[in-house]
Length: 97
Image 1 (cartoon, rainbow, N blue to C red):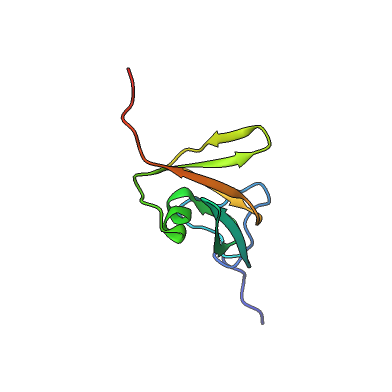
Image 2 (image 1 turned 120 degrees about the horizontal axis):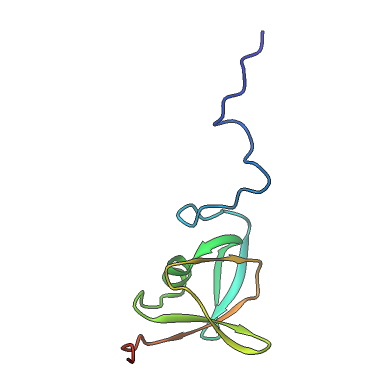
């Protein structure tokens, strides 16, 4: 007799996205923060975890380098890393009114 599969054992639905509080732990890839190589797990990572891995102050702003320039990131959000992404950090500044 086989035991039934519990919800805990079942794979997630295909449209379910990873929760930012539970980063994926895929293979290690290299990203670059302020032109320095950083080894980190591939997949969904919080911006805070990238800052921590790169030794960047949590209060600093992290932006993603794109072909069109720098892209502002939600500092409380997450991003899916594939490897070779490039980021720049900037000291936090006060908000203008």
